[in-house]
Image 1 (cartoon, one colour):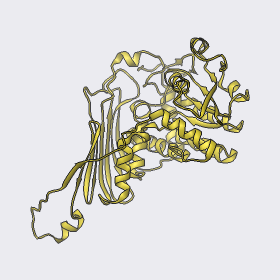
Image 2: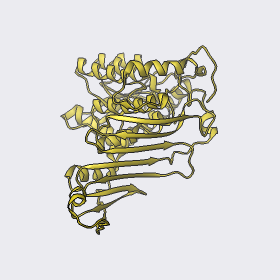
Image 3: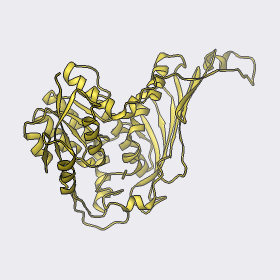
Image 4: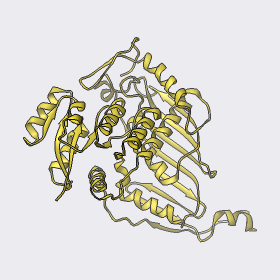
Amino acid sequence: MKKVRLGIIGIGNMGSEHCRLILSGKCPEVILTAVADRREERRAWAKQNLPDTVRIFAEGSDLIRSGVCEAVLTAVPHYQHEEISILAMENGLDVLCEKPAAVRASQAKRMLEAAERTGRTLTFMFNQRTNCLYRALRELLQSGRLGPIKRVSWIITDWYRTQRYYDSGSWRATWAGEGGGVLLNQCPHQLDLLIWLCGMPNAVTARCYEGKWHHIEVEDDVTACLEFPDGATGVFIASTGDLPGTNRLEIDCESGKAVCENGEVRVWELEENEREVCFSSDDPWYRTTAKEYTLETDGENPQHVGVINAFAAHLLRGEPLVAEAGDGLRAIELSNAIHLSGWTGERLAIPVSGERFDRELDRRIASSRTVKTGDITYETSHQGTGSRL
């Protein structure tokens, strides 16, 4: 059976887990042929735990140019996504990149341009799209049974982190090391799902509180008010400072609503469209009984395995990817817009000016603490306060 020869660049927490998934046989159309990591201890782990047939490199660029693989999975720090992905595509390799696509939309755009220029496949690890709850919810929304969306509210605050977590690495929660906080580390999947389920917002007004609950320099508490082209509105709330926290997604539509919480999707279907009732009913205090039920799913939730297998099936037979390259760009455009609105206090159209966002982020990087790790080095001219996923 034909298999995709895959190299993994970055074998930290996620990269090493991808290695284990592939070697366990859960990705039958993929063969792991190489790994790369700048940290000596991770290469030592690879030598001890991976088959002798897997070549080990210190630099991702050497792996890319080695000729031992035809595709790469990049699991490196955020700021390296652009460089590694473009280098791989320019050397004839297809790319599956961990989330987020990049720190800046301008970087993600260059990645998409490289994919178009080289004709290579570029996709992103949006594994939450494989969750049966979100797949069933999307199918329901697209069926039209609930009618057009009026409002969406997502409170996603069950990512509690202690100060010890942030102090565990000098690069964590710094503008220079990661480019953001809860928005860039914990939220990329939810921002992608929000767009996948409800469409892309076209404006945002946000508040991003930096170091509100922790001694860090990036945001750990976010509230964003979203506007959609068809008039729908939304609220997105995220924090790493709430205990026990909440994960509740509610989507209100003209003919009912759906609530995703506690591992299920509850649905309320109206017999009539609320917009028609509003202007036709003679009852000022109109009430009705909705059909209430739990949305059925197929129970499948393959997560990272699902994304990797879809990537292989696409390369071998042209089958659909879990996420297209443009999906990665849209998610980071929304993230950038929330950040910039939070920094400026302005209501902003989406996408925001890439030049303006980059300029504002660069100002924060300039005052960020110096970051030095085995993965990557950022030298900054000033020492700031503060201390990722």
